[in-house]
Length: 129
Ligand SMILES: [Zn+2]
Image (cartoon, rainbow, N blue to C red):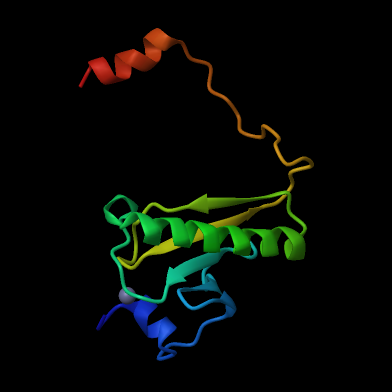
């Protein structure tokens, strides 16, 4: 699609740091990463970035491609997990963001700081609106 930066990357009009590709998807290093090794998995064909409007087979295929790239990142960056984010924002071209999760000692490790709350307090937030 004209004026789509991801389409321009796929057609090599714009340079990218490609680390993987198959016939449907490519993975590139993010040029402004939030963390070392942050990747974008892009469809080679232009689709909207909103996951829940995608055809099932396209959604399934990008998840499977993303899994392959996550396994590459686990091994090459020596991380236990890779986070997958598909919020559909930023560029309206199908993409998934992959964030290597550094610092985990185990595959599953609770590292988030929890906020103490109660069911009543949580529900009150919604009842006020
Ligand atoms: Zn595009």
